[in-house]
Picture (tube, rainbow, N blue to C red):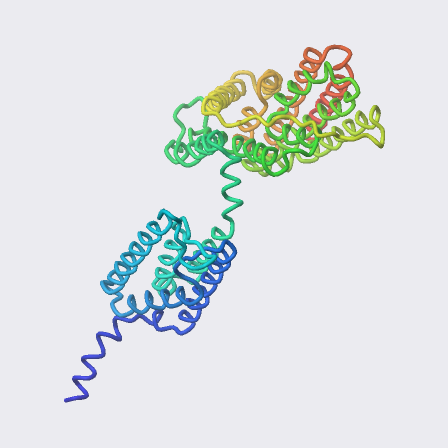
Length: 452
């Protein structure tokens, strides 16, 4: 009878403890993570002569207490919640005491040479240490490890994070909010089914194209703005080409009118930004249609290399081997505007409908005329429209040639912009280089058609 009572009394308790909760390696991981977290807090507060609750002894004990209180009642963790309430009340009392000491007149210190912490980071650290207990016992081990590592990184990065916040400011946060709206709110809401017989492209594909182009432009902007803001004109021109080679051409052409001794660098930068456009086209196409990207890769790679050679020739022709780039850079412009995204989407839809209509009414050859016209506006909408509609070997070759023709048309436009904004004296040489690059693009399109 006593055996029966003992078995019946212990079985519910043992059944309430899953095997995962009893694993000794999880307790070892828990204590190690809590100790690691305590070391980081001790180092942070010790360097600043701050007195705060928690450290290499308190955090492991808090983590162990949280784990044990949870393990005793895992189905209904009243004990764990009660411990959390007690910890919260103790931290509240300590925080009030600290504020009273901190703002007392005359100033009172807790210990000689030690002052009290002015924030709530130590309080949050104690809560994290306590919560690590049930998280380590019940979740995959990467979860508590990630939590502890993130807490340590945030603890030691206070100065850098504050400096970053001051640098970013409200404008950049607004830009990031727009980026998140474009990706996280609008994209999941749009339907992924065609809404008209004029084109097979769905609204989801339209906005996905907006997301891809916006992401590439925003990444280029962030690199130029924060990672390498002062690496010279050529560097910023290359990043500008990833964002918009046409906009970069206009800015550089206006400077070239009064460049004087810096004309060699400006001419090279003008050609370099257009050369990077070929790389941008290849990236965008590869995201949506790898087959078309493979068909385009040889031509775009050759055009990219040819553009780099022209830019190098212009740079060395006037500057020579000992020339300095200087600190002059292009001011990075914010690429994310909701209005710009909407205009891009409408242009993308219009070109998709136009491509389908032209193919039906006039045959595949009409696509080349449409590509030439699209190149004088924006290359990306046509590129994305063709990338999402090309299937079959013959269609890949035709669409590849059409993209090359659109790039050629766009380069002719940029050459005209260069002459218009830089004038004959400052813009003739780079404009001629852009026209040569356009001729090379046309030749590549003809070769692509000949191989079809």
